[in-house]
Image (cartoon, rainbow, N blue to C red; front, side):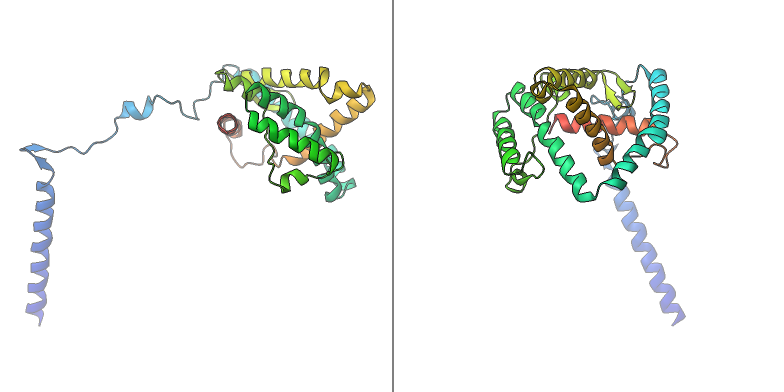
Length: 254
């Protein structure tokens, strides 16, 4: 019995050796060693498309200082206001406020979709604006969304990208947070258009405009779950820079 087991083991060893030799011989082609096609180091490192980790940040020293300022502003001023807002208003009311603000901001979506010649999106945005302003009672509800008219979000930064303008250097804006040169210009243009030709100009009441602006800022921060220094990463600055760049690339490419 022991002899049979040893013989079987020997046969298995010989078979495995033959398979190994056969496999090695298959790596030979026309008498030459066959090298599998592998990507070279230069191809990986110097890829034509830049890596998300290689975000242009020529203002990094300034940006890191603003990033620290934003942390303290957010932690000791903005978040206490947001918590008070959330404590005072029930979730249902908060949702109505968010819907109304989104409805007013459809002006920017309409303008930028028109500038990008996205006529289907312009039609959808007009439909949303009319339906939500009437059936939705000044935008407090969003019946257009439930009827299949999805919000066509566009800003002037995306409009510039649509016409070939690149990101430019990464920028951290005071209070507003991550941005880049193109999106900063876009934000300034959207703000000016809203103030000079949008709903703010239609009302022509400084008190109402300030109240809307303040409520919009609080509502926007209320909707963003991110909290500084709670990512668990010692490289939070780099992480935010990468995620912002990825998000904006996604926004531009729909």
